Amino acid sequence: MILVTGAAGFIGANFVLDWFTQSDEPVINLDKLTYAGNMQSLASLKGKPNHIFVHGDIGDRALLQRLLAEHKPRAVVNFAAESHVDRSIHGPEDFIQTNVVGTFHLLESVRTHWGSLDTEAKAAFRFLHVSTDEVYGTLGPADAPFTETTPFAPNSPYSASKASSDHLVRAYHHTYGLPVLTTNCSNNYGPYHFPEKLIPLMIVNALAGKPLPVYGDGMQVRDWLFVKDHCSAIRRVLEAGVPGETYNVGGWNEKPNIEIVNTVCALLNEMSPRRDGKAYADQITYVTDRPGHDRRYAIDASKIHRELGWRPAETFETGIRKTVRWYLDNQPWVQQVQSGEYRQWMDQQYGNKA
Image (cartoon, rainbow, N blue to C red):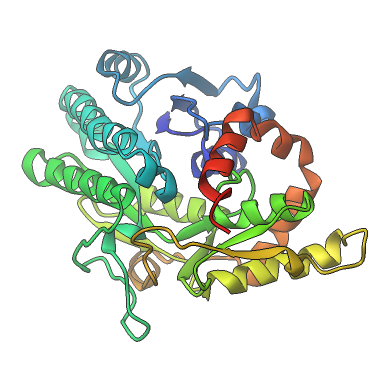
């Protein structure tokens, strides 16, 4: 059995769904169910006896200690995090509480549990911490991509909170011997992505006839990773990663944001044309850039390929086509997540920036 935290969120839900296509090993799913946690993403697992959902917070030590003692998982995979840069700018405290303080409480609970195991179980146990490439800061146009030894230089409250959690995880390995693994991934996209992030936001707004807000000049560069490829990388690191090591996970797809938006528009023109015959790109609206917006991220994922034999299965072209198709085919899910809180946030974030 494994314990997965934050497994009702975007990447966590995809990980659990993919896990059960590969294995019958039970999963304890611990999620706080904040605005981005959505049980509808896990609807296909309802009634499945080896999927145990627990509504709770990684900062709840008593709950964690009870779950660990009762179920004795062989591994903990930590997805639980506040993850939206824009929200961290408006309200950084939630990010500190979840990503820093919450990770600390989780580590303390796991350390106590790990210390109570017999020798064999102790040696086999793993704590896998899922993080982001944003901890490395920003790159210039000609700079080499981030490697696992790139110094941390976070530039937003979100990335600073994730860098802090990465440091804590590292410290628990070097100080206490806890067998930890850390992955730092590039921008994920794919099914079940909450529509505040770039790709699902563009799809949802385009279909609704709304403006497609693009920050600044739209030339911020990111590496794009299909979420199911990320899930396969995490499974591989959990299976064969060396305790104490960090593995960068990327899609080998560096693209500026405006190219992403135009690609989404072109696919929607093909799959779901506007009734008036016009192009979805006509809805693109440039808005004031966010404070401290990092210009470029790029991941060197050669270590995980060299040492663990992992590479992404999807190209950006195949992954983005699957993603647009999924959103077109799953409109009830999209409508369900667009709550009043979501609409209020979108008005606050983009309403006066055009």
